[in-house]
Image (cartoon, rainbow, N blue to C red; front, side, top):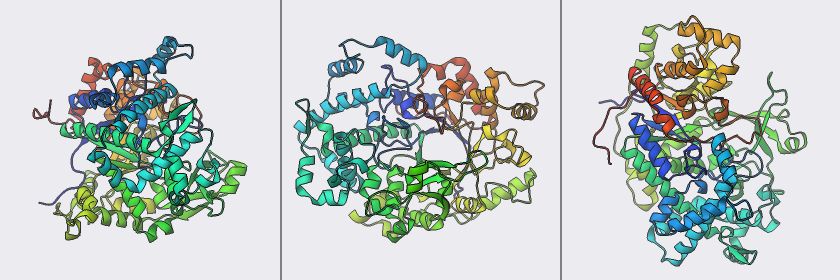
Length: 619
């Protein structure tokens, strides 16, 4: 029997772990709150939990807590470590946790800042400074207990398996702890700027393995071994959480940023994979997007850009490891800034530093099919025989049901059934990881292909049956595309993932309150209403329209299920708002609230996206 890609109708929610409820007013994590959220997804009969990148963030400087500015694309965020799991492991007691929690709330005079906590909960935003202090103290105490125990085989296996990225990351974080005032690693002392040289200097490495003394006290965070321990624990906690979800037929939908941060172990450890100046260690070019009618200077992002020729010489080994490791943690994946695989905008570093604009840049060809062919080959995935078009041909803008049937037949014909791994995937140690990740056909991948998209991008996306994104907020009042706007519900095709909004958009309620008269009129007429929807119902209308499309997958931000306004917006691009990346749900009771739960359940059922009940789930 032939396998059909993207068969079925599924739904899920977007909820980054930091936004999970936490009874202590701290950041959400991989602990009890995460398991309770999975239980809600099961109760609501959903299929997917979508998260943003799970890498370690900085909580000082620009964009604190931004998941897309991680200090490693391979590591996981220590903030998400489960305190409950550390207690179960016997590395810290509940009494010690309570004491550290009280200390993290201290106002500096030995008292508890209860007023601050109350204000925090009312504003529904995470106090990252307090959260990091608490987790660092918990992990430091747990690490000392772990060191005093005999090393376990599981820990040693973890370090050996992940050596490719773990050693460099651990050294990077140890140095970051030693030079906390440095903006980037370019500000570190010269002897620490080159990871290759550092590894060869036995004396320097030995000094790094000895904890720095601060206020007559050894600080474990200044040693690489501490950060290896943290990664071992947080990765295990995520593994257990994902297993809990998978056993209940909940799939994790992850996210990979296209670029990596300049201040990251990735650039510091592998500078040859980026367009860097070998003399100064600075980037030659940085990322951005060109000027347009809405932004005369363009947008300067500032990431180092990849040296794709260097990647190609290694058969894209770094990218293959990146995607392989990601798929060991998630079941489906969104590729951010998908257009960058076809062409990217680069700005000379000197211009970027001097003028802070992206205007003096150029388009450069990306790796395109070369990268994806290499990924499919090394991951052991079968190349689809026929791409499933995610939009009508340019000369066909009608909505004929015949055309839809032709599209579906064209897309699903000729796919190979899942097969046993080929002989080269059946070896021993050298092919162990390939055997682990082999699945025959590729897992679900979604392209973030919003904005200006060229024909080349569509061809690349559809060749590999990568889903296209659609956003309901973008569908209304498009004067340029009119009825041909790809985000309109009747233009959505099966090979799509539909959202009401993304982490970079306002909530539906916030959008509705500031929408133009043209947008409101268009949506009102589309719904067949005599008058505009009320603010209380606006989000439900967009949720219903998304659910009723033919898209394979619909994923809704939690804020749009409970009907929150702009106060619950997760990020406002281009702003330094202190509320960016910090919104937090007060309680899962808001999702279980009968009027909300029942209405959402009815929408899932009537749109054919509800998951069948299964009494065999583990209790």
